[in-house]
Length: 283
Image (tube, rainbow, N blue to C red; front, side, top):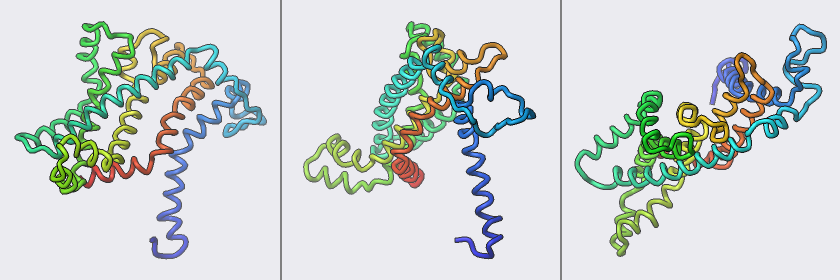
């Protein structure tokens, strides 16, 4: 609670909070307004009479119609959703088993292995896409969704493992030991006791992996070349920017519609996401 007079509360708390919220939300507001602004208003100079730069007086769906009829935006959405879901499931499965093993099983170099996995996550993707491009070319996966499905786990699995390893450490071992005393095997105790308790951490890792896959740009730009195989981040940028011409209306419409699935996921699971991150940090 902030102590002091009213102006002190405004200067210390409310003014910075308002500035932060304004700076955070204004790009999304501008994206929304540009999506529904007709071209006549969009390219009108600011010094002209009756100019309304921060809202539109004649909203239109023309840019969204252009996106779905004159481009392959629907196909890009499907490609992005398919690649993100499959790569997230693969990464979550591997991270779940690796995180449990590093947190629960006792073997030599377990601590060093956990640290090395986290360091692996810190390697910039720009350093990895050259050898990964050679691998995908060798196995004839270039310009297919599997080029991304099999390369995204290279940076998703280390993060999922690190996050789940920290969350598993917050769960008391006594619960698992009691299950084993009652006759359950390690796998049964892991699946029936530990995994349900760790569900906030699992959801948190899954949401973060899905977000990284959905927004990834470098690998998708390098590994996918044909228009039919592109994802939303690459398709919107490569097909709606031609030379020095920017189609701002469809660009903002594509960015807005491409943000909705991720916002939808966070809106429903934000409590589990925060709980998972908190548990991981404590662990």
